[in-house]
Length: 298
Image (cartoon, rainbow, N blue to C red; front, side, top):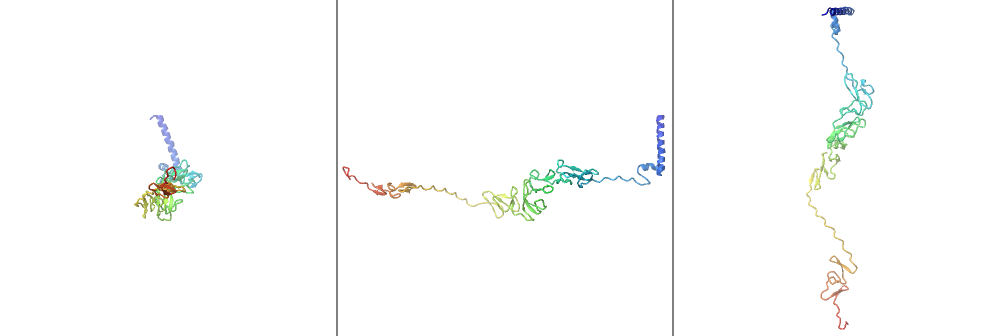
């Protein structure tokens, strides 16, 4: 080592030793325990662990994210220990973090069959194709999708649907309440999700099942099932006869034709009365023609 560098190092160590001795005298510690004091060990005591900050929770409407507050029009999501909460606007919200009315309260995860729209969990034909939707909650606008809604008893109460209701519905439309109070629905659900009590038109079914559609050759039987109709075929109705012609005062309807019975040799005085021999019909009577005398006189 260079002699100059050695002199500088020795001077530095000397100053640290002097300062260390003075500090040990002030603290009443020996020079041997000074290093221990620097490590947090004093008089045999262990170093105190640093306290870990607790997670900041959402506390409600307000303007201080450090206190877990989010303004109205957003929803709140905790971000981590000692960190301010995140306040999500409707444009930032997702199905996993939706506003639930955007009152500044905690964000919620939208139920299956719904999506987040403008801060509310919305149910429609896009998300709930095989079920039906409850009406929107009047406060939060939240909806639920009742999967396979047709022919289903709903045990949980929803807006517009009391607990124990029987509903019909499909295609993401609003559920139709068929019965309430836990009563079994005796009718059936149409393909469009309507409640049919008993039979109506070609719909046939019971126990809330999907209605059968009976054909023109079937009837809905006592067991509410379509059965073939074996009734004998109905003969066709003959066409109505043409109206009879109107004959004149000296005519009669003979064989469907108006005939002058005063001068008709085949219908003289009446239908089918034929003048025989040399007789001729005159005035409705068969008469022999008058013979003429010679010279032109009778």
